[in-house]
Structure formats: C-alpha cells, structure tokens
Image (cartoon, rainbow, N blue to C red; front, side):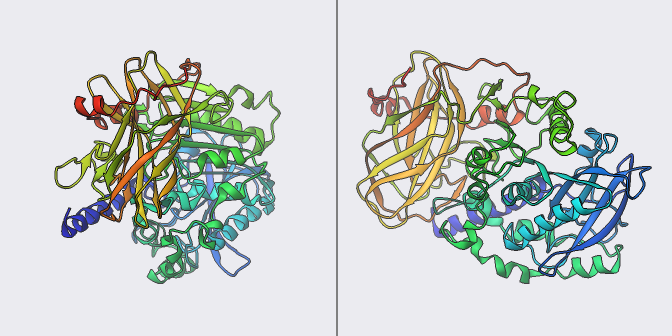
Length: 571
C-alpha cells in the first residue's frame, strides 16, 4: 500500500473508532428528573490533593436524612451534561439499571461521582492514574461516612466506570463491600498494546474519546461552581497523558495502572463480564488475570458478545443472550453490600462462571481457564511472510476498519499457514492459547501476528483467537493470545496463520522485510470432550453476526500443501 493510501486508511480508521467509542463506550448522559421512587440532591467533595468532585445523590423517597441505607456507587467520567440547554439534574446514564433492578424499592441509595476533569468536577482526567485513584478512594470513603450510610458500598459500571470499580477492588478502600464491573480492561497497557503493537481502537485515546466524552460535558444551567469546573477542562489536560503513547509496559505510567497485578489477594467480592468480540475493552487486557487474582467471592459472565451490558438488548433480544443479569447483580449486592444472609440472598444458586461457547450455548464452570483443559502445541510448518502490514484477520467489518480484503492493499489469509488434518471428532478448546514462533530473520520491531482459525471442509476460515507482538532479533518469540471458547466440528481443521499484521485490529509499522518462520507452535487448551449446556441462555446476536460475516475462504491447494500430519489434538 502506498504511504498516501495507508495514511487515508488510518484516518478512516480513527474516524470509525471515535464514532464507535462515542456510541459504545459511553451512552450520552443527560440531566433528568430523578428515577421513580427517588429523591435527588447534588453536592461536592474535596479530595486530599485539592480537587473538587461533583456528586449526585439519589435516595429512596420518604426517608429522613439519617435513615440508613447501603449505597450503590458509580465513579465515572460520563456523568456530565452533553449540552448547554439542560436543566440541572442527575445523569441518567444507568437509569435503566436503577429502575429495572428496583434499587430504590430495595432500599439502596445511589451516589454518582464525576471523576476529576469531567462533568462538574475540577482538575484533569488522567485515565485511571494516581489522581483518579485518589478520586475513587475519596468517593468510597465519603459515601460510607454519610449519616445516612450503613458504611457499606457496592460499585457498579460498564467500560470506564467499570474500570473504576476494578481499580477500587485493587485499592481496597475502607467500606467497599462489592464491585460489579462490566466489559473491563484491568491492565491499561494490555488494553492499548499487545507487546508493543498498538490496538487500533486505542488511537482515539485520550483526547478524541475520553476527552470529548468526559471533559466536554457541561451545562450553563447548573450552579456556578459546576459551570466553572466544567468549562475549565481544556486541551491542557491532555498534556499529562503523553505516557499513554509509551509502548514500554515497564514504564511507571503503565505499572501504576496494572490493576490485574495490584488486585492480587484482594478479597473484595467482584462480579465481572467480558466479551470475546468486544473491540473497545478487549478480553486480552488482563481480564482473566484479574479474575484469578481475586481471593474473595466472585462471579464472571464470559462469552461471544461485544461492548454491551448484561441487560442490554439488540432489538428485542438480550445482547449477551442470557436473561436474569440484573437479578443476579442484586442478589450479589444484597449478600455483600446489604449483608443479607445466604438464605435471603441466595448467591450460591448462581454459577461462579457462566460461559458461552461458540455454538451460543451456556454452561457453568468452576474455574477459568477450566481446570481440565490440557495445553497441547500445534506444531508449525516452516514458511515465511512479508512484514508489510497487509494482512487482516477476518472479513468482519464490525471488528475494525479492515476486513476489505482488497487486492493490492489489505489481504486476508496472507502469511505462513499450518493446518491440522481433518478432525476425527468434535473437539472444544477453552482457555488462553499461547504461541511461540521460531524466527530466523528479523529486523528490530518486526511484526509477528498469530491467528487461529476454524476451517470448514469447504475452506471457510473463521478466526477464533489472535495475538500480536514485536520481535527485535532472531530466536523464539512468545506471543500472548486472546482467551477463547470454541467448538470445532468433526471434519473441520484447525488453521494457524503467522503473518505481519491484523490491520483491522492493530496499528502496524511495517519493516517490509521477509521473515522466515523456522517452526514453533501454538498451544491450545483442549477440553476432554465437548461441554454440555447446563444453563439457560441463547446465542449473543454479535456471535451470529461474527459467524456469518467473519469467515473467508482459503483455497484448497493451500490447505493441501500446508497440512501438517503431526498436528493432532490430544483427544
């Protein structure tokens, strides 16, 4: 691709990403009348480092000021006003949850706190850095110290305001009793980079997405302090975020934002969701490490959806495919925030892990990865690829700006292939694959991308996981890969592709060198047999879209030439 062509494609990519983030990562917040059954007031709280945070407090109607309730807390950059024509009122970002889960009728208060640099709060947003970590701790401690508080708070959110809950679970402020965090990135580095290869969706950080959505929300109809704070958020706030473009995971900017590491040993009860097809908060961003770092009560929903909440719908269908999310959340809150006994808040009836596999069916698991998963390597054939940033991993445009497959620009299935023989029976892989690629020739910062495919008898290839890294020298390069949960039908093949790009998902700077693949393999987590469904639920609509749009065809000659008879599943 020419420099001009690549520049035009990257510009289009950023435009698409910003549009996606504005719609997906943060629903527009509006001032609204309080939800049914709630009264409202606003106030401000001071942080130890001198910032002022705007707060909405909603309480069940009819209570006196000192009538004690537990609280649900949202700490977010998305609670400000989106225009200058709205009357003051609480943000309606999660009204559907408050009303659908009947939180006020159940005796909970709700506190919504705008992070520094957003809404009516002073200061500069720092994307879950030291300042916002102070905000999170301050918000929890303020809420639990109110005369109406029982001293116990549960945090709730999705995306950014789910990650504030993730940070809280790692920080463990006094009074934090539970966290519900949907579609999360516990390790901010792995949310932006895969071993120094930048995710395309993170190009919009921090200014075009968080800056526009958080710092740009204000209303002249609010009180004077709100207006002064909200109009003081300027481009200068972005100056402190230059570290977001460092590709070194050991830099202090990133290590202080690695909540998967910092959560080790935390006993804060935590309920998370994550989707394999979420391009905004990718499932490779430390989600599984964070879940396994927690030592207290925990829950997880994991499956084939995108950037949605458990109660969201696509038309009339549930976006995750499984009903009862709000009810399960409230059982979790009732047990750990309200402190009800198990008999009155039967969380023991809910699975530790509700997992959706590639056929759309749901089952329970007691660990993730499943404890009986057996990691076995699929050996790679020798081959080569050109590190020219051409390849895309799938034909699904919703997965990113790529997927065109146009000759001379991007190409699908462009690289060094290895295929297994046709499978003699159906098999399932569930867990976190890992690749180790033996490279003979590389230039510094050579792109190494590994994809795994389900290849049907007609050559149709559907990607089931991916990973990317940069190699600086010849030798074995390890490539971290996305978790997956996939069923291969009898007669299908497993396909492994090593290339220089997944241009629909990552930003690649090509070396334009020929890279020799001298072997290596991809270790897949095989289950002893295909799991049977034991939970109610249906396929996520996004899964159905993926299955219909992502596949592309690999020609039969390539499959025949690149089949490795030594590549055999263990079962």
